[in-house]
View 1 (cartoon, rainbow, N blue to C red):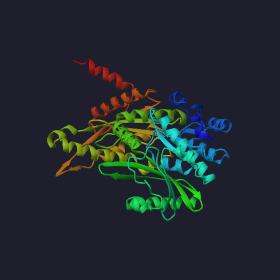
View 2 (view 1 turned 180 degrees about the vertical axis):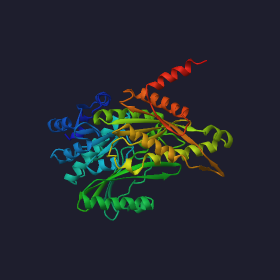
View 3 (view 1 turned 45 degrees about the vertical axis):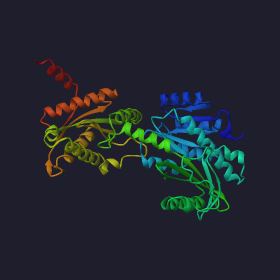
View 4 (view 1 turned 135 degrees about the vertical axis):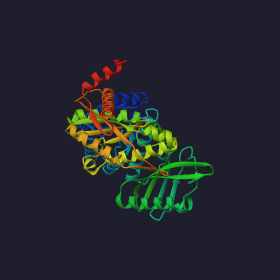
Length: 446
């Protein structure tokens, strides 16, 4: 019996977050999977060699060997060459995702994990992996094996000629490849898509690596998203597995709506809080400081009242762009390793923004960034035919110096921001416990 056709496939979960391991374990076991778990990379490698799992779910940031090192080690083992490795990451970091695929990742899943679709996603990966394994060993066209694949499967050559085709079970929403054997990709697909498909096939044949790309097809009022995975199968031929990923794309779009501010396209307060929790975990491991900068625009309301909300929205968009550029100065970007939490700007609400700074050695580094952001906003903004000037008051709180609680860290940075306003605006202020006393005095005054 093939590994992916086991009644209870064995999944290895490697993540230093016990809550994530518990959530994934509960979801998979309820869906008929067996699971084993590791809390760090070294333990994960040991379990892989001893248990021989059918699929590995792998976190990126962990104590000891990180996810990239673990994946490399798995691929170097005789039993690890074809085992699917799925990275779990909470960041939309294209560089990290590209690196993951370069070192042998099969796929990635973004956190928070969609537990409703996770079992189906893993079963599809297991089926596809088993099919690719069989095709690389032999070109046997076993109909029972092919019927188990929930995707369209094409056999093509370097010239883009379709030699054979097995349609998806139940058919794709757009039946582009029906009875396509003997035809060329260029006869069935839009020109640009057909050319990408042909080039990816050539690369797969030369490199013996899996080539992956996404494309869209339309038919009438229906538009669907697809993913093609192409692998050499010997004799100058390649197998392309084409999957309808329309629902997955819709989920990703909904996630963007839930986690990003629609006006500025910055992370919103919900995403900021999630990344703040991850940053504090990273800080505990590294012994470095994490800073929260709470920024409020000075004199924004007069601009909004005099020029209107549309002008106010344009101003917020330009402010967001300057803040993002200011945080990503070259001296900071150079310190960001793959999958480390980046210095990040978010729109907290209204004319308030928050900035997350990680891996700091001293609090003065946070002050340097705050000063740079204030300078970034010092030049006038052009809104239509108007020149507009605003400034910013910034409060700074540091973990673990000021507090070890994420919500209190936000509150401390907020109080420090009001202290900056009291000091004349267009400046920054570090949190101190004295600010709590001043806050109580102001409340008690009649």
